[in-house]
Amino acid sequence: MATEEHPLKPTTEKPKKPNWKQKIIEIKQNITVEPVLACYVVPSVLSRLATQNLNLDKACRVNKNYGDKVCDALIARQGNQYLEEELAVQELIAGMESWKNVLLTAIPSFLILFLGAWSDRTGKRKVCILLPIIGELLMCLSNIVNAYYFYELPVQVTMFFEAFFPAITGGWISMYMGAFSYISDASDEESRTFRVGVANLCLTAGTPIGSVLSGVLLKHVGYYGVFTLSCLLYLFSIIYGFFYIQDPKTAAIKNDTKDESSDLRGFLKSFFDIKHVRETLTVAFKKGPNHRRTKSILVLASISFIYGSAYDTTYFMSVNCDINMKGVRLSLYQS
Image (cartoon, rainbow, N blue to C red; front, side):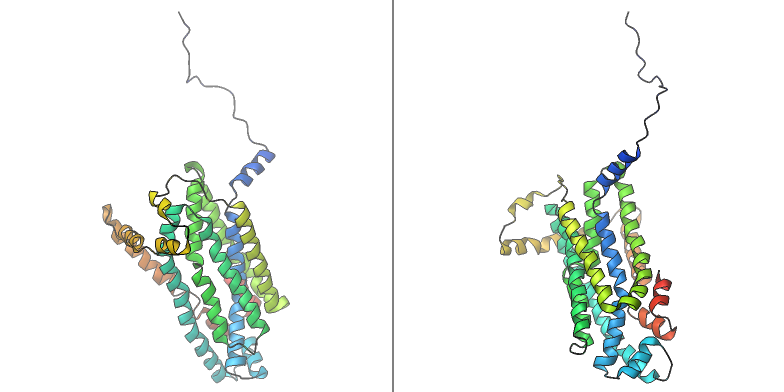
């Protein structure tokens, strides 16, 4: 008679703990899109204060032509004897911020309807991640040009390119969509939640890091130093993403991918297919159990009220002019 086996018999052997070398190898294997996200958020926040200061400076010196005495006092907040000039500069910047934010949100919102469907059909996530970074790099380069030709270019030109380059490349909407779609495709079910958390950590931790450095760097190295450093970080992010991020080979690519033409006309016809917009809107407003559609609409509406009012349209001018907070103090407060 054969002896009975005990497959469920408990063993006294303890699983071996990985050593430091194995842990480092495992971490290295799981790092893909995270450095790109960090090097996208940090320079974006880092250059924000310099960009706002540059716009305020240009509006005062170039557009209003108030002169160095008035503008130095307004930028440094060294007195309240120029209230009329300060109000005129604020009105100019606030009016331009309104259409700048429309441009920054309207174009990416339109593009994402087609870009998301195209990315799902083709499985190409890297383009969605790197394209917004290229837009931010071009914006930083345009700010360097506008700082160099300070008196030749008015603030309208500066603020237009601040919105134009990020808008036509998808902005943060395309970046977030591509990054989290990539993580979802490239990770298994066991590590997906952890990797999404790490990606969110890179996004949230980059904000205070960039904010706390922005005022200090602006004070010591000026516009050129801040924008050049931001350009270098963007460039590193693009190079890293180009060589180290590979589009995941998923089986979820639709069958109609093979029908896409390789020429430009065929690509544009396939990319801007209104059928995919219709499918996207159908999914977004599809009825579900437990009032899912109503809950989704309410969540989106609450987001617009919570974050819409804090979209930096008048935030910088409020804390800089009304509360007399600028430079290093402002960056520390934001961080």
